[in-house]
Length: 110
Image (cartoon, rainbow, N blue to C red; front, side, top):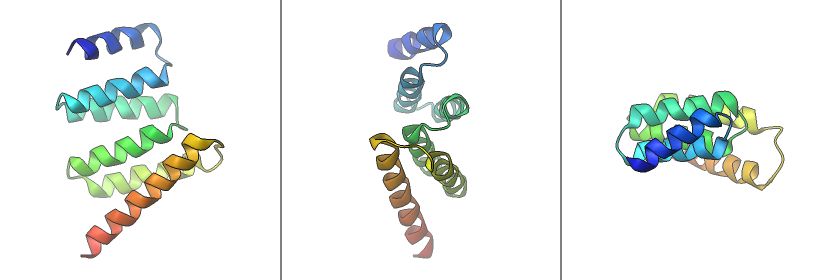
């Protein structure tokens, strides 16, 4: 909980710090507060729509919450947002999102 408080304090001072915002979402998820983690990821994506890790994590979180149709929407939005983004992180995120979408489709077909 101390890490969560520290990250929240940091973000109050530096709300555009995408790494801290992502870290807070991960810590909230680890603490079992999935709703707060979802809210944090959505805030991250509002400020940083090109965050491949944010799109990927949001989709995975939604699947874990039993909300696969919303995960698919989140991942497809991520692919659109990342379409014009260059760099290794974007390429890796696109590949992972595409893999997760394939797995989701295979699960729904079985």
